[in-house]
Image (cartoon, rainbow, N blue to C red; front, side):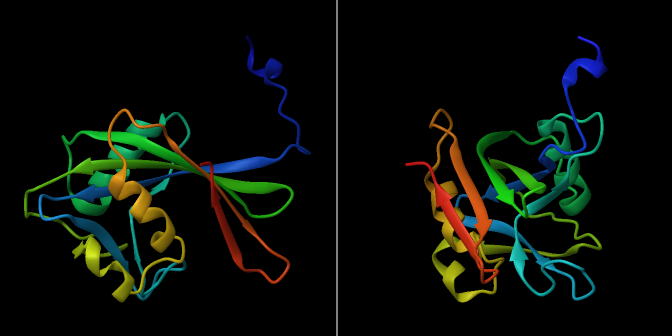
Length: 168
């Protein structure tokens, strides 16, 4: 099918595709990135590793690229465990593809995005994290290869507050 037959119109709802990766170690710690104070988004907060999917990339290649750029970690197996749609407004949103993996080596290479830290899963409620992590991370922790994908939608209510829901 030619590109012209894809039926994309300027009035269609569009999404920005992103990846979000969570690595765990044998001690049940999760690797998070602490947002640099100069970051435009999530400065001073812990978040997963990830970023935008670039033109020509599939979601796995993009996740592995982001992982290497932000941590120096490569040659690691990760798997797709979920997908979240974020409705930003009536015209645009964000499609987040969530990956999970395991990593037990110590060497980490921080990036300009921020510092890296292994945070015990049991202590996540005590550290400053991006708003949705307290809801989504318990689901990711318990997700195993072969489980159904975690499917969620985030939206903003009339007060501008984030509302999070997942399929059962």
